[in-house]
Image (cartoon, rainbow, N blue to C red; front, side, top):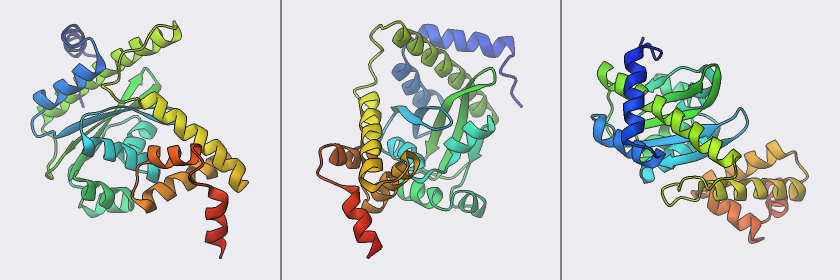
Length: 242
């Protein structure tokens, strides 16, 4: 196992932070420095929430979104266990048994392998960095070591962003993606569904996810329809009961 407290590991993280002082630049460096990796996603998490902070491409964005929609996947497992989850072949029965909904959906989206690395400060989980590739295959030891260094640098930059936000400073740009705004729309829609359908917030979010997945649409689009009152879930509930 790689010792993330090793002085050499820490030195490499510090060198990365000098070269890439923003999260987007650091994540883009993953693609050029990790052989065989097709995309990277970073999700900031708590036990109850997920916020996609970075997705390098459409496949990465879909991989992150599917885990939020379906409530399962390597990202969630890596966060829960505080250990890397290395799914080198999503066609394998092991992963289909572990993630019966996510594994086939991720393959359909274009990911044949997903590697989830937990982002932690001491014993506190902050989120997960996901790497995917479009062909099956495990990570070489050196590639995994490099990925863990990059994950350590991601943690440092997220801490910097958090400190800036707590100090009421303008947070760094999110690569043109208004992830914070998108998540706010999801939370607002969840509250509206809770009232419309007369269900707890947790059930409302589950209904929102299920409807988005069944419709083949992204969660943010469905949430925006709810907030704009183009879609109501009391009507959907009536339809489902018939």
